[in-house]
Structures are given as C-alpha cells and as structure tokens.
Image 1: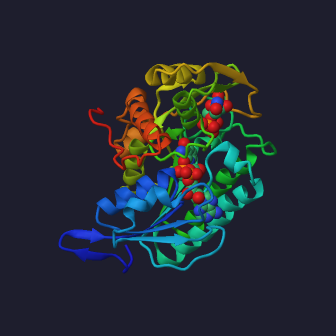
Image 2: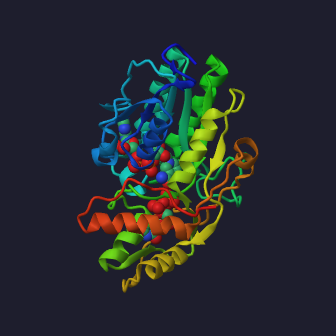
Length: 337
Ligand code: NAD
Ligand code: UDP
C-alpha cells in the first residue's frame, strides 16, 4: 500500500478509484467500498451511467465524484483502482464502436500508467465476451475463445481482449499488481431501463404490457449473476495476494435459455405481454456458462442469490421506477443462501 492510505484505529482507510463508478455495477461497488470505511473517487463520463445511481452517496464526505473520460490521462494519488469504465450493453457499445475500443484500450493504458506511478493495485472488469461465441462449454479460463475480429461486437470483445493483454504486459514488464475478473451476464437494481440488455428489457416490457422481444428462437443460453454476488467477488479478488492475477471467471453457473428467462419474467410479473420473435443480432453467442472452479478455489466464492430471488428484487426496482417512484437503494436479498 502506498502512503495515501491512512489508519484510523484498526481500520485501514484506502483511497480507491472506481472508473465507470456511476454505472450499474460501479455504483454498487462504490457503495460497498464506502461501507468498508474507504475514501472513494468515482470517475465517469456519464455515457451510460448517471448521477441518480450515486445520488444517495453524495452527502458522504468520503465520496468524491469526478466527470472525466478514461480515454484521457489523469493524475491522482490512489491505493487501488477498479477499472469498470466501458459501456456493457450491445446497443450502447455498438453506438460508437471506435469510442468503445478507445475506452477499453486507451482507458486501460491510462489506468495502468496511473497504477505504475502510484504503485496501486488495479482490477480490470473484463468479460465473458473474450470467449466470443464459445466452442468450449462451460467456459474455463484457459480457453482462448472464438471471436470474430471484424464484426459488430468486435469493438467490445477485442477491446476487452487487448485490455487483458495490456494488463499482463504491464505485469511482466513493470511488475504491476494486477487482477483480471471475467464477468458473465450480471443483472440487478440500477440497470438502466433502456439499457437494451435482456433482463432489463424483459422486465420493463412485462411491466408495461409491451411485447417481449426474443431475438432468434430464444434457445441461446446465458447464465445470470445477481449484482451483489458479483461485487462480493470483486472484493475477494482485490484481497488476494499479489501473486494472484486471474483471469478468473465470475458469474453464476446456472444456465437458462432466453425463452426460459422470458417465461419466468412473465410468470413473476403476472404479465399478459406476448412473446414476439425478432432477428438474432450477428455474432450473438449461442451458449454461455462460466466454469467457476478457479473462483471457488482461489476466492472461496460462489453466487448465493438464485435467479428467482434476484429477479424479484429487480422487478421491484423497475416497478417503483416505472411508477415514477424513488426505488430503494437497498439491493440485498433476504434469505439468499
Ligand atoms: P454500465 O454501462 O452501467 O456502466 C459503465 C459505466 O462506464 C457507465 O457509468 C458509463 O457512463 C461509464 N463510461 C463509459 N465510457 C466511459 C469513458 N470513456 N470514461 C469514463 N466513464 C465511462 O455497465 P455495467 O454493467 O455497470 O458494466 C461495468 C463494467 O463491467 C464494464 O466494463 C463492462 O464491460 C463490465 N461487464 C459487465 C457485465 C454485465 O453483465 N453487467 C458483463 C461483463 C462485463
Ligand atoms: N436478447 C433478447 N431480447 C432482448 C435483448 C436481448 O432476446 O430484448 C438476447 C440477446 O440476443 C442475447 C441474450 O438475450 O442472446 C443476452 O443479451 P444481452 O444484450 O443481455 O447480453 P449479451 O450476453 O448478448 O452481451
């Protein structure tokens, strides 16, 4: 730890930078880090995130909000960096694909440069998309993937792959303390209602009585992890000793077809919405499920929240939001294993 950390009694107070901190996962992470007594700098350019996600943290003197684009260098004194800045939903990352690649690649270079100068430990929010449309199932960390380098998803997939390369080269060349987590589909309160990802789309459509848009036949699979389970994994990854770098898969291994997800959401919302079938976007992965053996072994971590429990909390969130109310900031699931 460098000298910006301070000690108060037995509590070590770290100064932690979260890029993409006003986004869905970033806001949950900021909240968790503050609850542990740290100083948190939340950096965001508000491309897909918004101030509403972190409004409840603004009065906390240990919280600092900074509008900044991660593709530009920045000079700060920090002990730890969580690099989450990057749009995660296909419609958003395909909106300006050149900026998406820049965010992953220039963003990684800038944050790794900051980590090099300050000696900070640095975590990269990587993704299951580094496996592309995988031919190995479930996906293990030693699988190199099956990725189209020139398609519509490539700006995200290849950007994240290049970011991983940079992390490991900075490790080899400059001995940086790096941590790489490969995140599988994650959902929960504070996803943006127009985010375009499948869980938020289906819930919003079901609650408003619109058609549920299934892309393709709906037999492609995904494995859905609840946000707070994932934040616990981030915490455990950062706490590993310096010899542990990852990459490590973090996600929920319970796998569902997209049609099963639609039916579950319809049933849980008592909705009369109809299923409609739309064209499948190009390069849409046909199956995805993490092998989390490494996370179990190295982090003693596995998800605790079942899909129904997480969906219930997420439905509650969107229901309040759509009725014009102020959703609770409490995302914990009572009774999770
Ligand atoms: P999100 O879109 O809600 O959050 C991303 C945040 O990054 C937003 O607040 C956005 O405004 C900010 N941002 C984007 N470009 C930026 C830039 N150039 N400079 C500064 N800030 C910028 O998405 P999320 O689901 O919270 O994802 C967070 C991270 O986790 C992303 O890196 C994403 O790739 C990764 N991830 C998420 C999932 C998932 O299912 N949620 C899966 C795999 C990987
Ligand atoms: N999907 C869908 N309807 C929607 C949104 C997404 O059928 O309204 C499908 C999408 O084609 C993909 C899966 O759901 O097969 C997950 O999509 P998402 O955008 O959430 O994440 P991805 O895993 O593709 O990055």
